[in-house]
Image (cartoon, rainbow, N blue to C red; front, side, top):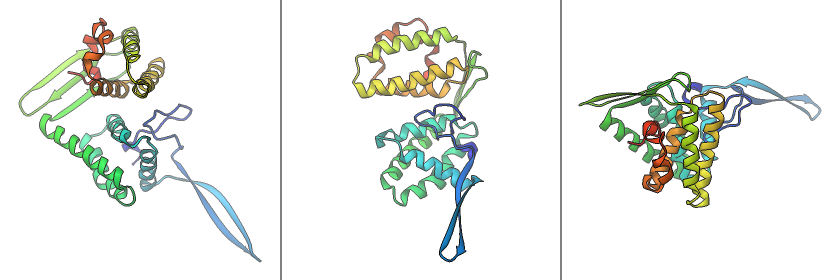
Length: 238
């Protein structure tokens, strides 16, 4: 089950919606009765089972505060999954959701609504995939539906991404503090990943969702920046 979930790499600061690194091992305790009332407790590490990976996922989800950010957590994990998206949705519906219903009804309700939105979208527009190699390489976006297909090649440079982020930082100064913090969290993490030449696709999609939630017309500096129009699809903005 490890492959289902986005887990931080060893030594990396975890993204807000990543599961903290735990070296694929879980700490267990072995209790031994040595007689005469003496008890010895020995700790040891054991490879994580599928159920324990699921537990780590739920723990990370339950730790998200405030609770209305849970859909963003699910979106992030969903975007990081490299297999068939329907497999991830099935994992959430048939493994995570039943456990959440037992003791976490508010989370279960959020998960059900999130699943409904994803499954409805999947049924209406077909599949949407983004394939990328090196972060500086061209990104190919392909969208298929029952009636049409579209392929677009987008080239971008680190400089162009940084220009877009600079314009975005100016625009978010007009927003409430809590919203600015959400933007800065995603932007700062994307910049770090860009410096490491890692894939920043999940961060761009998360930033795009934040932009859409606020309303694109608010971001006048971003819209007027030269690079934004060319790379706008990377933010999931049509």
